[in-house]
Length: 336
Image 1 (spheres, one colour):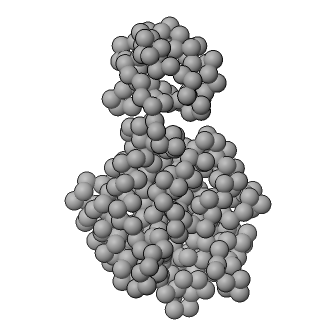
Image 2: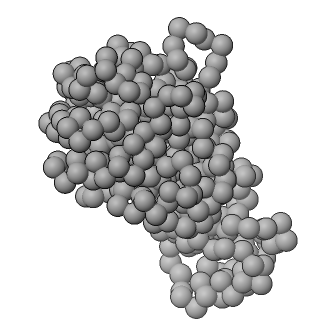
Image 3: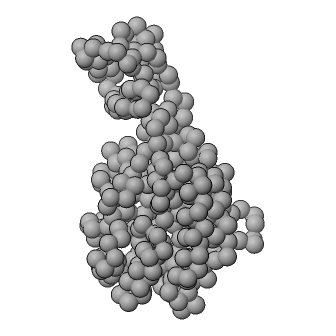
């Protein structure tokens, strides 16, 4: 349920409304929008009589929210959420690119790539320290050592780092990580999501391989219900019957997510298709569809990469993509 307050109101009338709502044991989330002030009620609102609320002097309107996701719902938060990390903003008019290797392999590799993507205009460095792999015999990442190497790359370039968490047991290791990524396979790891909800760190949540948009938003809701509202959604392709690409990038998910939710939406064209030459056209399509950013895999020697080298761009290829990105974001009045 959402309650829209009148522009001209007395504080005692607002307090009277709060006192009335207090008997129903719901969480009240005040949102100051550009157009109006809204109180979002989260919890069991079935017993609340809408006519009683409308009778309050301070209330302009009352609406029930039928969707199961509340905190992530644009009805609760009409304005776009802007997530700020290290002086960099994602959301609203702010478009940012996250780039780097699928997996951190060595200090030399990750620093070289970090310097290259920064020079091309990337705002964040991505790199996997813990890697979920389909085969138990594939490279699983350098774990804690990988996190240390990412921090060295951050010290060398100033780029905030984005890396994936796979287990609650590793949470303490992520204290210096700027954005914690939840991968597609963990999108419905609800215990992990609930714990990340108690964190104040921004969470980059990837859509699952075969999950609906509503399920995606409900996973975001798990994080937000714990009090962490710094959530970034990432469309990374879904599994379909198509075999020409690794996955199918759901471009329509971008405007749909932004219609129903206020959270920033970024796109990962690298994982979506697994084909390097598709990164550029899909990046352009994502910008045109309203995405707030991109996540692109870049490796200094893709042929020798220990993880997903086939879908990674070289630094030179990434630079070419960024030239197109800069031109297109300017057309759509987005700030890189």
